[in-house]
Image: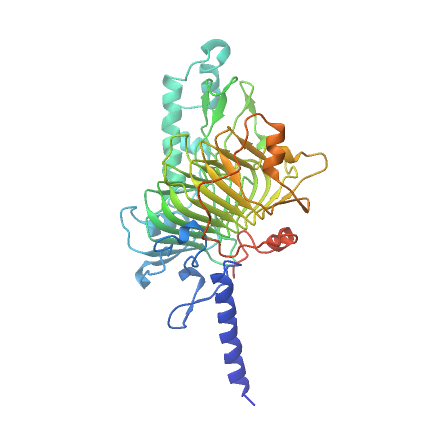
Length: 446
């Protein structure tokens, strides 16, 4: 009979092997994986498993896993995060462990900053701005002049505080058990490669100084900047087990000026400007309007914008889950709960336009009583959505056929590619909503 110590050793090895197998299959994000020498790798050094979506293409996505000890940081303040990120031109592999919640609206000493602090010295005030550009007196032309210049200066001051530029070969991970995340900030992954973002809550990303655009639509709009995470020209990015929310300030509480909502929120996670080879998995998107944009315009980069979204939960969101343009986008095993939440009323889940090639399969929708399947999708008549195995309220449903039956601009049903990077794809999804409720978002990894 084996000794107690030997039995404990066997149990440890089995735990590592089983967890590694789960991670390799893309079925969860176990804390431990195995390398070629059968050594355990901690959460902070994990890399994207093989075949786990588009970000596994080529050499895969490894983030800062090769960081030396001098480039492994634990940060808990804005100033520490800025220092750990360093220069965006420095591609040295780095691991940044975020402990607790970092408030982006603080100065280098940690003092809380308000919108008034960001506007200090610029001459901007909302009341003066509203008076200057009231359509009743100013007309419906683009704002220009003193108050618009002052608004731009104030916006630049806020931007210096809340935008964090991420270098190539970086892993950002929330320390388990610390409520890790970034409040009021925007991670910018621009024109860099090989980035991992995991186990973080992104909340309250707010623009203090939205711009009035009277030419946006028939009645004008207030447009804000700052996504919680924005990918622009980024390649090989893995976003895993994060939570995105507007909390604590929801859109229903925002004021109205010039007859339009004074919108302080932009995107949650936007993937634009020729970004490519991105995997977004096991995240929770909630309490938000314009959630995810793939492709910044109808003329964004052809041949790029290859994105995989799987095992994510979308609840209490209005639209763009995602809005897809041009690229090859694979959506599988996602859960969409379209029940209104905190005033966020759903418009649609998936929008395929500008010749986007979307494959949506084995996803699950929960619709409240009276909601129409035809409103789950949107399009401009040029985009495609293929795929099968989708469930609506537990019933197998052809969501594209339902949309096309009710709309003149049809969504095409064939695509010019076939997904091959499908780690963890589940074809039996009757219990998926319950499974993901316990395995997605920040705070699950340990």
